[in-house]
Image (cartoon, rainbow, N blue to C red; front, side):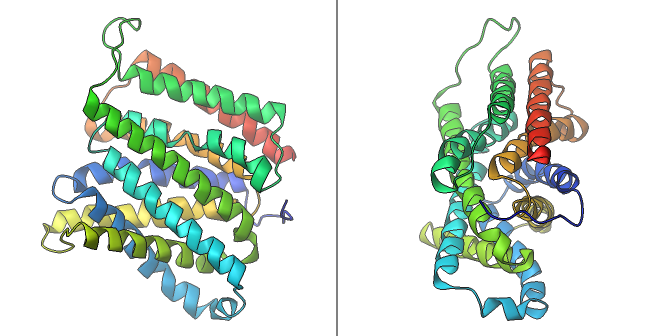
Amino acid sequence: MPHRERPPVPPYLVLALGILAVSMASIFIRFAQREASSLVIAAYRLTLATLLILPVAVGRYGHEWKRIGRSDLLWMLLSGVFLALHFVTWITSLEYTTVASSVVLVSLSPVFVAIAAPLFLRETISLRTALGILLALVGSGMVGLSDACTGSPLRCELGGSRSLIGNLLALAGAVMVAGYFMIGRRVRGRFSLPVYIALVYGTAAVVCLLIVAAARLPLLGYAPMTYVWMSLVAIFPQLIGHSSFNWALRYLPTAVVTVTTLGEPIGSTVLAYLILGEIPGWIKLLGGGLILTGIAIVSREGAGA
């Protein structure tokens, strides 16, 4: 396991800022999807974030680029591919299923991290951490189930084929982001944050741009507000949100970071209520309580590790 340094600020405070930022993603994306393709939104998100961080990464930390070895370079390139595929699948899922279901399913990455981290990162998952993950995932399931239930909570129907496609895409996004987080835990501590995310985000941006080109989708010609929404996606959820998670990976186990991101469905639900007027039902509120309980348990475990 990588050596854990003493963080300059509390990692959980940074994670809270990251959760607030990524919770805005689904709202901004929904507005941008009124005109732009999901693939184009993903490409803009990563390209703009890379262009914003690159001057800092090159200007202030230019000396670090010379000591990036072949192995670290390959790992960060692979991390960028995982990140690109995460956004391609997850953002596209928002075209087919509800915001709540999409965000909940893509937040299931701790399941895949918990399975893979002991094998690839040699990080142990304690019984307490496993309990926190279980509670958080049960809560996530309840949040997702609440969208399929009308009237009595016992009268629930599975969504149609369109919703199924969206849910599967969101689940694929969870697998991809799990790989992205695990590689970040392996490599992140050896480089400054701007250098790491410039290379990873830049790789992801190139992958998305290649996919957009292959699909023959236009990158220009949209209304001004569409560019505003895509820019906000790049600045808040990507540059602030994901960068906060990458920063925390230097000081906390992967499972702790990924489980904490399960707070995103709560943030998205609150923002959907404030901005879109979507009022959550009692099942969703109860599920949200379980998610927060699971996060609290895992956070205490990680702080004492």
